[in-house]
Length: 52
Image (tube, rainbow, N blue to C red; front, side, top):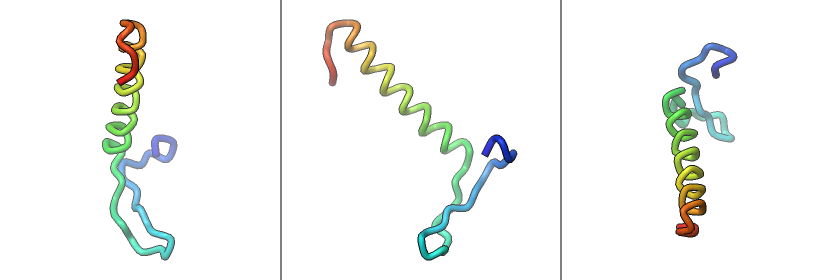
């Protein structure tokens, strides 16, 4: 999306029918949540709490 300068892209199913629109903000938010989860796991490991 960044390479092409797109902020929104259509999402289509296998039958090529539209399912919705994917927004760059949604993608970034999803990636940020993954980073936060990994950070929480690492923090718990370092603090000797273990994995939750």
